[in-house]
Image (tube, rainbow, N blue to C red):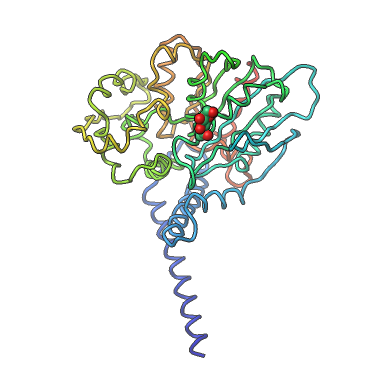
Length: 409
Ligand SMILES: *[C@@H]1O[C@H](CO)[C@@H](O)[C@H](O)[C@H]1NC(C)=O
């Protein structure tokens, strides 16, 4: 009797704790996020962010209880929710060395080799997987009649920077050594990535320039990428810091984990105190908000940057400032050799201005750029394109832009 009573009490307390945490996350979601009026279905976006926030919060709690790491928890839930539609393409799982990859080939016969797409998904190396992006990849392969290789780079909890990006580079080299084996025309290979995968696409394109043993990449498609981690006070960072899905808070949570940086350096990073004065001098011309068109700077107060230099912060964070994570900082000679690009920014995204700055760098060096700013877009919307409950028009605007650009290659 006493035993049953104790169990009953225990269950009641547990239920209250769970409800309390969920309620706290709900209140935090309502108080700390804002949804701009130009995004249709604001309620859907809030609910989506609530679920996202719950997954991060519960993952962090399980991690503290040593049950399971936050990234593992997040990925498990996300994969369980993924719908894997095949859109009339043949799908083959392969491994390039340690890296799992998935090949999507249109089923229709073709008399000549097809265009190739190397695809790197996003998720900050915390979230995202081949399964979660399966429908998108098969849809892109089918719509553009291309052979698409998706790279399932290694991620957290086991692998932090530079594994994700380096795996993308290595898998791409492997593919480019024998494109014909996959029915791909070597002169028509496009690299395409979203979010951290967009960073990977930019790094892959820069790294493989001028390799005599590989066919040159024909074009790059960067979808709301992160391209630099030096100036985190650009107008988009300040204007959109509380807009789902990538709030500043979530960006730091994911970025600290991927880069294995202690969260105590947040203020130093935000104020640029971790950047040596000569680095600021060297890169200011590319990172200044003056490079961003006026309409994106409305109501923007230029913050005083940087704070006095903090050498300890620099030593702990200097890998953020390397072109291997900040490809926007590559030299002019590198930028000038890049192939034509499609750059897609989301208007309501803290990373929007990275795309605007890269666009300017490419154009200043004579590289042809097609740029599309999705006016009602928010970070992370691409994978929702065929989601029955949480779909937004911006996912389709974005996908149509990618499809029409790719078909022209
Ligand atoms: C990528 O390939 C290079 C050269 O083969 C190798 O040294 C490196 O360890 C590989 N990187 C990863 C992350 O496996």
